[in-house]
Length: 387
Ligand code: PLP
Image (cartoon, rainbow, N blue to C red; front, side, top):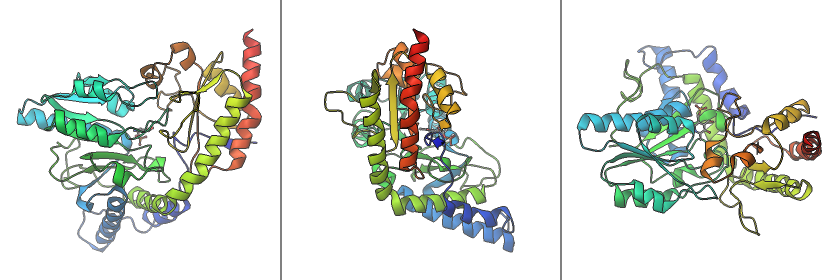
């Protein structure tokens, strides 16, 4: 028995994406910046992919900047706005972000000496704290659409309204990397001037993504050189990857609604059964007697397990063929205490027993059954060893 429940880390490519990509790895290899037939063929494919991504992201084709993934898009957003504002000497020098952002946002903001905004116990941004952090000195505000650890979705429309009121000169960026598979990003991210996505989270290949840069947004390019992507991101485009990303995005648009329904039911069965069968288990960000996971992504199950070390639990799960993770997968295997859980007020001790099980587009009831067959026994075994 084996099961993959780490789709927030990366999810397999959709068959449509693989099929779309293959010709560009073989015969259709042209450089889209060239002037001959092969180059024009690649350019046409790139243009079509740009149109498709624009539709999926709710922007004009010219506002799509292809990147090497979510990390680059996030770095470009934060550093790019700061750099442009610094060059303009407009007095807007501060970056603001929530304390639960992915490190691809958090580290650039911290490096720039920015302000981090608190979240509540559910993991939702504290709007009063955000208001207090905003002012005329703010250049960029970055609030993710959905969190990679907890799956919590942020109220971006309310955030945007506050930014308009309190820091009208600031640029709003949202990291929609985890959101795109599950949510209507074209609508929900509409108030943001900059929007990051990454193909490998929704059925495209690793190492390719996009940043929406709405027209008129003041951003400086990080990568300079050949002037590709209308001078906003130099470097020969990853045509095969981009074509595959666009095919995956199309597939997402075609079946997002059905996927969300199907996966929500599976996720609820998984969580409800574990909460019932395993003592000392809680869900991160879910409070109250009648638990409400309406503010979480459909595929997200994030548990806090008393008296268990994540590392040991993951080892037992892995041994039983279950791929899962503790928090995000980006801490290079090191079990650092999660900054997301700390910001949500979870004690270090409880955070030490966190388990992230994330479902994705290929997940089946059999995956849920496999976890339910293994996890309660693994927790029990670790607790008995500890005594
Ligand atoms: N932002 C979020 C919310 C993520 O979950 C991730 C990946 O885990 C990234 C950014 C980075 O994306 P990439 O892996 O494409 O660099």
